[in-house]
Image (cartoon, rainbow, N blue to C red):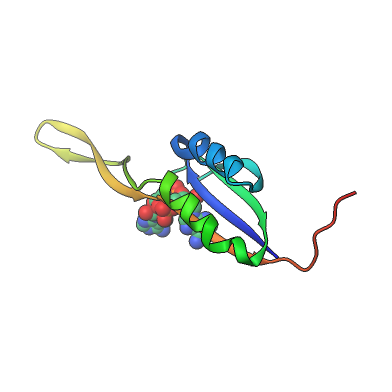
Length: 107
Ligand code: 2BA
């Protein structure tokens, strides 16, 4: 058994959760914040059998899309004064970890 931890863009959260339910996965969603952009994202904790790993990757892959996010950076000085600057940061589709699970019990 494994625990998948999957971090996705907030905009993909509902679509991914609908598809996970339809595909028979059980999971918990945590509200989270990206350490770099400091923006909200969603972290899914999904308990699964080893033989469901490839199916999970397929479900995540068809629902989570790469995006570019604009990030404000320190203003730069120009002849016109201090100008705000921004840079584009690629985000996602999804970041996925698999952790081995020793046991799974329900009470
Ligand atoms: P954030 O930490 O807000 O990162 C957003 C995006 O910024 C990242 O997209 C990556 O393209 C870029 N980025 C992150 N750290 C950077 C750095 N030190 N220097 C330059 N660029 C950097 P993703 O890699 O797709 O990550 C999306 C979100 O997934 C992250 O949001 C974070 O919440 C989570 N994440 C990514 N890698 C992780 C890891 N190794 N451990 C835990 N969480 C991770």
